[in-house]
Image (cartoon, rainbow, N blue to C red; front, side, top):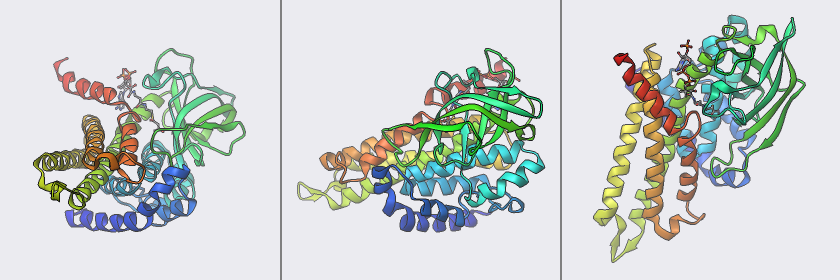
Length: 379
Ligand code: CAA
């Protein structure tokens, strides 16, 4: 795609975000639910299958386009942004990249159209950052596997129809012996136990899911047997670009609001933006957003070109998440007492930003990944 194509896409998504998503954002936050007709519109516009090839019912775009979509939608509503990101990066992508032809033909068209929503079941109550220590077990029963265990903090868990699930097929005390499966969420024994009451992204469901002897046909093994940890890590490399784009969208929303407020609000006989202390905050916000965007584009470009991108996706997520947290904090500061109230949207941006430093690998884990990549040449 050419630069002008990306600009055209951004304009189109931006118009959709402003007219269809932004007006609902406060009520999505308050009611803790994304209306199903909005999810339908995301599907109709190709935002849930952006980089799925046309032959599997997708829009046939690339990862740069996907990151633009997540950024623009998250600028309007971070909950809606992560619905797209978790669905696309964490469920659609592993099926597209590791699935066989039958699995792709069976599952991708409905995921790409939004008829089905996807989720990713890796984390467990006692296996968060230390993902390799998960204990959910898939017992080989001949024709099928039987999965039992509990998964935690599953984004889209309440709405999902299809889950990419990681479970051990051999009892080990580390990441070895993990296999990946495609699980249909209406299978017997698959049960959403509870949804978390969270600080932010309140419209996005974060579910605990119990697997009680869930039967999964042998043909739903995803990728190679007992290579599941690599599938999870590779999937998260791409997912982290999506979360970086979500953080960028939240930061951009806070920056635009702070700019608008600094123009409207008059103190000492002049608009706030005439005061250099405010100008400097706006300058730093603008610079951090530009740097985040370039890191995201570079990681996406490398992924599109088939180059290594683990380092770049960790850098993009680390930088964009910390930038979003800083920018949303400063946006409240610019808006003063008003910014601290629920009448103004910046407190929502601040609450929504925090999760980007936590999920799909904390900022500390991004630093671990970055350092490991930078230091490996010394070995
Ligand atoms: N791609 C492919 N393979 C990879 C990889 C990558 N990016 N990173 C590591 N691997 C492979 C290694 O090559 C190694 O394989 P070999 O045995 O063949 O050499 C294997 O994985 C183990 O590697 P490590 O020894 O580096 O693994 P580790 O156990 O020390 O863990 C870690 C590394 C970086 C800490 C990793 O566990 C990690 O990223 N943890 C964070 C997990 C995470 O992001 N959780 C978020 C949950 S998802 C989520 O948030 C869901 C949601 O719905 C929002």
